[in-house]
Image 1: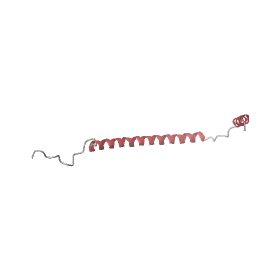
Image 2: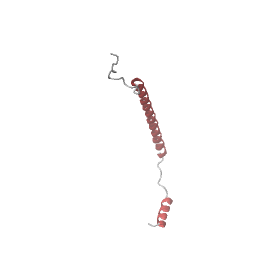
Image 3: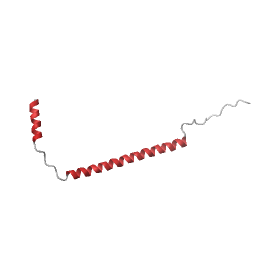
Image 4: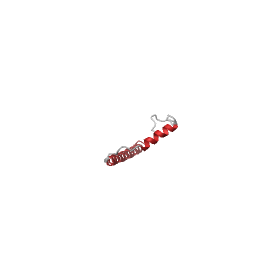
Amino acid sequence: MNLPEREAAVRRMLERTPPPVPPDLHAEVVRRGSRMLRRRTTARRLLWLVLLAAALAFTIWASVARPWVEPPSTTTPPVSDW
């Protein structure tokens, strides 16, 4: 197909009357869209809650375990004044 034939085919497709739209399509789309928004909002809130719980658990663990402190020595220092 060359360019003029393609343009003519596109024009014919655009000039055709569109198929009829079901009358309840808008209501169905709005219902599904609102359900999707509710699910996304719930998922987002749940993820934020999990992130907050993880940060809180890490903070509590770090304050109890104190991983930045050097562990005590397992050997005794040499005795020098005998």
